[in-house]
Image (cartoon, rainbow, N blue to C red; front, side, top):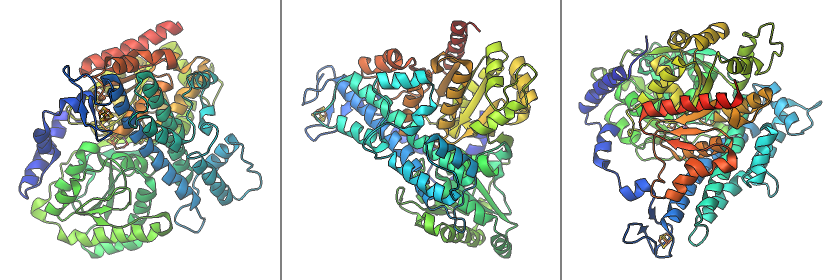
Length: 626
Ligand code: BF8
Ligand code: SF4
């Protein structure tokens, strides 16, 4: 039985009551103070990139002081928004490359998947024969870091795309060069007195997005796998019920597995467990929030406490000894909120420093000591719990996660039958799609957002799609919504149409496959690229679409841009701030199709959004003649 959104909300309400006892604030209250939002902001029609302004476009004032029209202003804002996301994902990728540089057989970070490292090295034309794996790791990390600033050429991983896609990127001049260059170029283009032509701004938005998806994020994913292991199917649990009343609860939150992996290592350390027992707890329980949770769930089966909009809830349980964060999607609210309880709010990165936190600066060289200090701090905090404030909603679901591209291939080999002799490829998946047993696939991704009843869009859309024999690959907070609802439990096959149900049974998979964190949307890019190759079609011909029904962050727009630029139609349930310009809106929802064979659809009505995706999938099938 699925857990319903009503049940999620009931649990949240109980937690808000718990918080009221200690005067805790929460996003549910702050939303009220911020509504209605500024119309200029919502439509993207305010410009504040120079101090002649800020300029706001109205019917009476159709141009800024410099003469820029609304299309230029909206386009520039959109490009800056994208560049923020590309920079963020790619800088996460860069941190991973630095961690790879620290890899040492006797140090904190090891090479857990040497085969994958060798595979990528060969792909990049690096000599591997007779080389020590750690020497190779260091060499590869240096090459990877050069992808951020090399003066010439485009991203190395673009070659993974089908020839046709690569030709489009060349033809349209959107093949991303050095990653930092695309971000800097975007900021340059949007400086006062540079680009105000919507076509130019949207084109650069696509290129900047591509530098993320096929550059920084892809390196983030690939080298995380090299360091921490490539995910394989693994059992875990999801929702707040994974927190334990009688154990030290450490919540890891953020994105970079370099931190969370170390915390998990030390939480498993017998010495630490003994210490926790000495302090009166039965043990140490690590659970996750946001993408870092996806990272450790995919590789270790660490339970998922919740997604973005549940981050305050973990503290509101009164049972969180420490919430340890690195970068991205962390509410600054966690500082003051933790002070209402006994919780330690631990920041660890110079990139994300916040008031009312304990700052333990984490870096690759001292990672072991840092992690140990944090785990110890949490253990020693157990005694400060106020039993009268402990309230853990007993609600959780089982989930099978860990579907990296590699493990999807392995899983598919199980459904291989006599007609399909190509094991180790996506041929079985292609045949399921071509025969219509599976109608298509939807990549469900992105955040949740108070503008949409949280998690409803994710869950309702997934239920609708699987009932129509559409398989789901999910990542980020969307994946966590699915897991908390129970859609990653293999038994969710009973909610599928007959075709998808059969595939779930044969392959022994849930109908919603967890592919990881948001940087791991790069795994989905590899998946569609390989599927197109094996089907001998273009990516844009596949009955596949992307969907971010509750997105909120700049990163999500960067993702949207690379997904569209890869030839995949993308459906949004929240408006990117572009409605103020007919030209920019026209380009994004239609015009870019002439460049990259795909475009955006924005639809706030969730039911209509689902229908639109299903219709698109069927259109693609009809065009393919399957
Ligand atoms: O990168 S889905 S709220 S946690 S931005 Fe953030 Fe959105 Fe969650 Fe991960 Ni992605
Ligand atoms: Fe106004 Fe132009 Fe300056 Fe923007 S760049 S704030 S539109 S004067």
